[in-house]
Image (cartoon, rainbow, N blue to C red; front, side, top):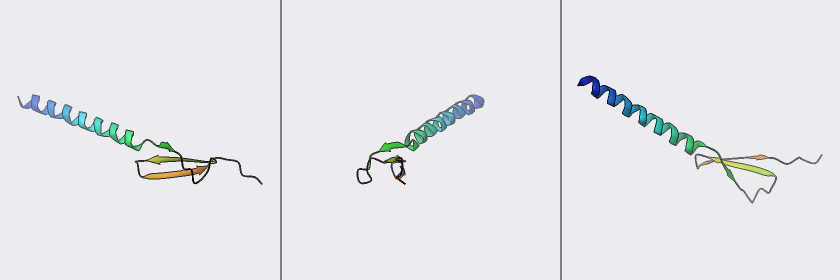
Length: 62
């Protein structure tokens, strides 16, 4: 009986870890964000609903 309890507990723990990893990946995936104040030459992405990074995508005139 003790072996069945341990096996069930390991399956439950594995399931919880997999669900937590999936949720972390879903939340941490960068999303495209439009920042109208920067203009069309900028591409922005938001990660974890908090961190926003932007990069200039246009060619600068010389």
